[in-house]
Length: 319
Image (tube, rainbow, N blue to C red; front, side, top):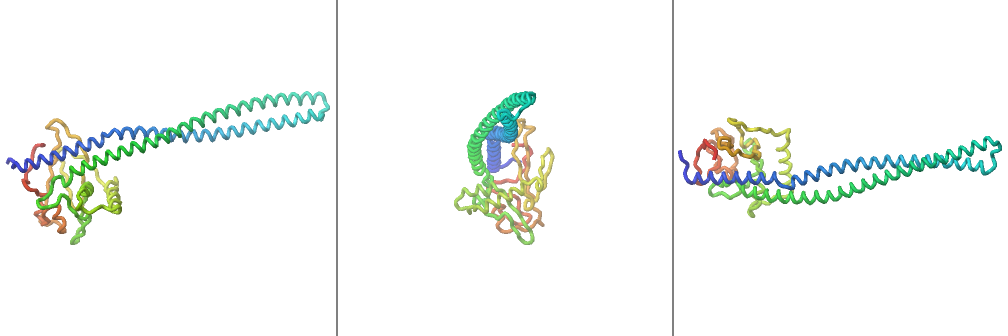
């Protein structure tokens, strides 16, 4: 049966909304700031590791220099002691005098060798310190770059979030006589049943309307915490739809969402996902406030979101 012009227009509007959301998600993933941040963060990791290694190397060279200088001082002390004996006429035996003079010469050569070692260690330490200073300077400059690119990325994401929010305000699903936003508590304990309704993008997009209740800092903190629980791998279940799959969800007890996707160009491979609302006659009772979202809260008569011009139908081919 052919759909009415109003229904066809409605389907076209929803298709445009989905297409716009897909374009926004594509832009979100393709922001150049993502690649630049990845490059900067990779370089920051390299510099962090390099600075740690250079700091340890300088510490080792400091100990090596201190030991070499101590060896020089020890040899110098022996030379001074031997020179004191020679100059003080404390050696009477010609053979002992010859041995002592030979020892002084040997110690002076040893002192010269040790002083060369000290100079070499000092040069290596200075070179390592210069490399460390350069790495630290680069990392400081990198932090500025990271902050700048992060701010640019966040600004771009915020703009895309705003565009997404505008595109998803109730997805154009505004029942006749209702406001373009709905004010329903996330948790609703009613007649022995806890029902949950949550879509953060709806909550945040509703803030564009001056008559909507403003979110407080505590509200935002609660939303952040709720999101962290919903996204916890230990609490959530990820599914990949295959052709022919059917997923059954209880709309009032299970949080559910769909991730972004890129569709195929070939008509025979295009994504074709049908959404069906089932409202059994023995369904749980819902508080009156849910009528803001569903239009009706009568069990057995909660057939989704009915807007003006809506016609129930089942499209068998992707649009």
